[in-house]
Structure formats: structure tokens, C-alpha cells
View (cartoon, helix red, strand yellow):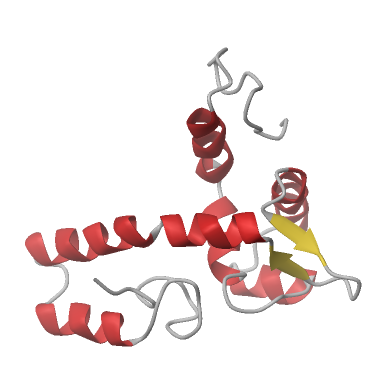
Length: 141
């Protein structure tokens, strides 16, 4: 699978529009989860694999290669992976989606207002604090 980059045809779209490239890149299985897990601290390959529920080494390597090529992730000299400023910006761009998801969950009754308030108190999505599993933590309105 080729790396999605702005200006290049991607996913059946020949225009190369940046939003299409971003949707293609982040729509790939595990890509957003990798961003989520790297949001707070750099991680090595094995710790990252463990945080991603033991995803296969080949898929992890492929996703990391794509995220590295897209300049969303970089590898440190000690072999750990970390978000680049672009990767950190991508996490910040998820804030409105996180807020919407919280409202949606309350609306359909899968989360109470108390749970939503608790998740807001855990901190921002950029990972300075919050749930490390990535399912509820780090949201605020």
C-alpha cells in the first residue's frame, strides 16, 4: 500500500486533495490508534505493539512506515517512535470529534453525564493525562 500524501492520487481520487490523503492515511486500520498511543510519550516497537493489543509485527511495521513517510511520526535515535509537530497537530484536530463523540454517547444513552464529566477531567487528548487505553480518556468540552 502506498503512502497517502497530499498532491498525489489516492483511494480512487485523482485530484490529490490534502483532505483525501489525510482520510486515506488515518482511515487505515491502526493508524489513529498509533497516533493515540504516541500522543504523550515516545514508545519503542514492542511497547507500542503491546499497547495496540498485540497487533501483528508486520502490520505495525507497515503502519509505522506509512506514518513515517507522511511525516506524522518520527523515529528517535534510541529507536523509539514519537509524534512530529504534524502528528501532534493531527491529534489536536481530533478534539472536536472527541467532543462530538461524548455528546453522541450521552444522546444515545451509552454514557452518563457523570462519565462524560469524568473523562473531561482526565485531561486533553494530546495525552498529558488520561486513559492510556485510548477508549474514553483525555476528552474535554
